[in-house]
Amino acid sequence: MELLKEKIRTEGIVLSEQVLKVDAFLNHQIDPRLMQQIGHAFAERFRDQGITKIVTIEASGIAPAVMAGLELGVPVIFARKYQSLTLRENLYISKVFSFTKQTESTIAISAKHLHANDHVLVIDDFLANGHAAKALLDLIGQAGASVAGLGIVIEKSFQEGRSLLENEGYRVESLARVKSLKDGKVTFVD
Ligand code: 5GP
Image (cartoon, rainbow, N blue to C red; front, side, top):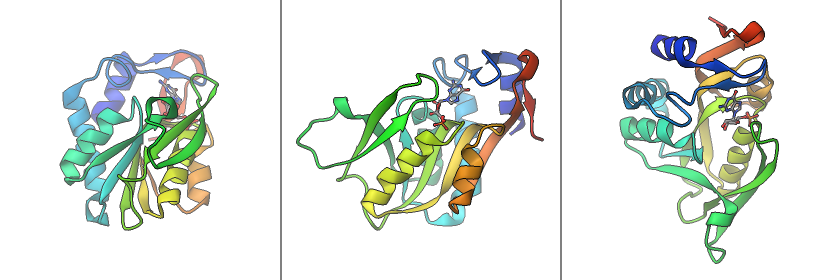
């Protein structure tokens, strides 16, 4: 997606060889028009797949997921940090190691929103080592739902997330594939 790559080139900040900061348009301040186009791009890739729900993780996955949900006409569920949920609820629960915080947290989805007959598109802002994606797939598996694939806004192709997911048979669609963050510069796969 050319517009997204241009945004990353002009407004992205390379924090290290591993971490890209995009808080000017994705992670903190949000560019709604760009987000609308991101939603459209995901919908184009998954429109014929019979998707019934989109699943993402709070907080940065919500904006692109909602835009994709709007385009596809399906509800969006975001996995919540466990502590913020009412304990009495019937929950699907998983653990996720946060790449940016380097801590483990527990995430959950209420069983009342996700069912065995759902066909799910997973969306997230970044794909690094695939921990967030795996935790979301775990929650979806607990519900007995099936997975159409994963839509990722920014994939860091030098990390192992994509190969991990593809080895398990999942379709991964990324709108921008970062090849390297070396020398303070972003280069793309294509
Ligand atoms: P993974 O679980 O695939 O290792 O990392 C993906 C998660 O970590 C995403 O949900 C995203 O929030 C965060 N993340 C991973 N890499 C980056 C990065 O380079 N920049 C930012 N801002 N977040 C990242």
